[in-house]
Each structure stands twice: as structure tokens, then as C-alpha cells.
Image 1 (tube, rainbow, N blue to C red):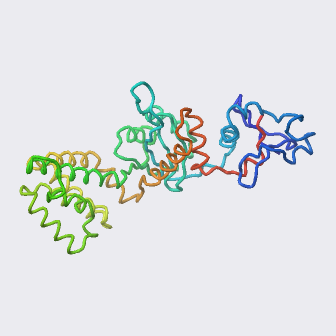
Image 2 (cartoon, helix red, strand yellow; image 1 turned 180 degrees about the vertical axis):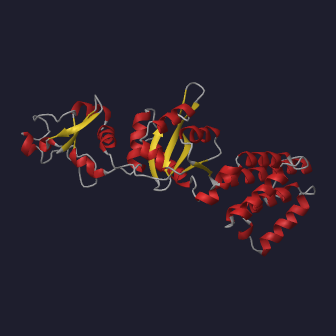
Length: 351
């Protein structure tokens, strides 16, 4: 039996395998003559009968034509998972002012698989997609990874209320490093009246400050202390550096209670009025996302696989020199990073 996919009516059915679409050993459509001409009465070449849907194949391209049929017919592509991730990626820029058009990547972070790409990052569109999924898929989910996005947090809260939300460690640490860099730049201007130059102590320390303390040797540690003593008389940069390292210690801790105490101490110290305004902002953000940041120690789930899949999606965009048709973009990305069951092509007849 062969799977029949009707592109016009988007229906999947069954048919006899007398004129099945031919694919090669790599799962790609073979558009030249095949063994099917022995049954169908002649090869699909000049002077012979045209294969079903040949005009539409030429119009939309074989990859899109057969790719859409494969994704519709593949019932085993999506596996049961207990963790999903949400992230945004830019599709293209449109209009006179080149406004960015964003889409949402939905990934299986447990199996490192692209589940779906939605043409929007709007709360309603993403929540509707989850609401349309089978009941068993939603019931199996335990964790939802995300960056510090209010939209995706709302999606999890409403569409998947039983899921534990986990903030990605990279994005949380980036908040601390960004605050550190902002303070360094501000102090630089306040002390010298200009932006960093190669002879300025704070400018020379900029890369060392972003490194983890456990990766610094004695010489590098001594250099940081010397440069900070010369360029940071108010000790604001030193304070931000210690906060950044405390947040790293939070993620490195294997004791959940100790980690919670460390994170609470960061919030208490940073939210004091005497602290630099950049650290106050950091403290308020961590306080607002406290439970979701702490959830990492329970789940040990990150949004890293989603970011990696976004990289694969961007590779597809580079190969295609950009896309303007979202459907073509979605199909190619799912074929590349969605782990389709290629052997299903052997039994697909597109009509």
C-alpha cells in the first residue's frame, strides 16, 4: 500500500502501489525515469505520460512539493518528550522601513529536534498551537525552557499550566555580564571623560572581567586587581564583578538549598538603593524570575538545543539567500532539522 497525499485538499489516504513516487537511497525525490514505467506504461519523459501533479511539481519545486507531503504523512516524526523550548528567530525584514518579521521556534530540547516553526511570536498564535496538540503530548510535558520572555512565560502559564518553567542559564548570566559591562563603560566615561582607549585600565581589563574566575591563573587575577585599583576608585566595577561571579557560583552549586540562599543574597544586595542602578535593575529582574531561575536546579534543562536548532535554521536561510515565502522556509527547515522519517517517501503518491 502507498500513502496518497492530495495537495489541493490536504488529505492523506491509501492507494495501491502501482505508480508510487520514486525516491533515492537518501530519501530525496528522483524526478527522472524510474522502474515505475514498467507498470505505468512508459517513463515520465518527453513523449510519454506525465506523472500525477507534474505541473504543480514544476511550479512549486520538488523539495516543497514532496516535502510538504512527507511532513503531512509522517506520523512518527514527533516523539513523546518531557521538555520543550521556545525561542524567537527573525524570518525577514519587510516594508519600507525594513521592519523585522519574527517567528517562533518550538523545539524538543530532550531529543534535540525541531517540532514546529510558527510565523509569529504573538502570545495568541503560540498558545493556540499548544492548545491544538493531542492531549497525551501536553500531559507528558514536565518542563518548558525559555529565555527571559514575558510572552513565552504567559504561553506556558496559560496553555501548559502544569509545566515547570525553566529560565535558560546563558540568558541569566548574560544579564549579569551586560550589567558589568555597562557599569565599566559608565565609570570609564566618568573618570576619564571619554570612551575606552587602549591605555585606559578599565578598557584593558574588559575581557578579563567577563571571564570566569576559575579560568584565571595567578597572573591574570593579579592583573585584574591592579587594573581595577587604577581605573575603578569607586569600586562599582569590582562590585559588579563579584555579583557576576556569585551568579556563576549559583549555577555551579550542587546543593539546592545553598543555591537558593546564594540567589536570594544576590537579590537582597542588588536591590539596595546604595547599589549602582545597573545592579538594581539586575536584582529586580532576578527577583521577578526567581522561581523560574531556581527551577534549573530541579530540571537541569536549558534552551541550548533550541538555540542550536535556530543556528541550523539560519544555515538554511544562508543557503537559500533568504526567504520571502514562509511556507517554503518552514518546510525546508523542518526537513533539515525536524528529523523526518525519510523512508515514508517510499510509499507516498502525490496527486
